[in-house]
Length: 81
Image (cartoon, rainbow, N blue to C red; front, top):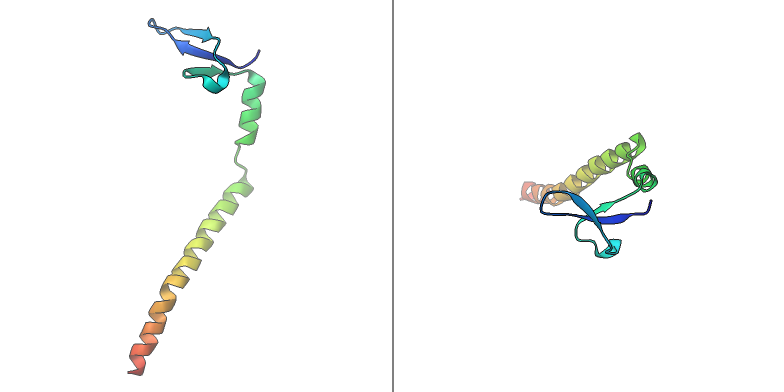
């Protein structure tokens, strides 16, 4: 089975149209093998989740450090006065 463009009619039934998939304005009916390959590429592994969490945590720490650095300089300048 190849991927097919389908649309809804007035009664709510799906019917196949001879529109190329790139120009399909309705729904695309795909084969099981296409669906399985799509799912295989979109799965999250524990390593992916851990990497995303670590990156987010590190980004917050680094951005807070750079945001607080000028405050520390201003505090030292005020203490010298």
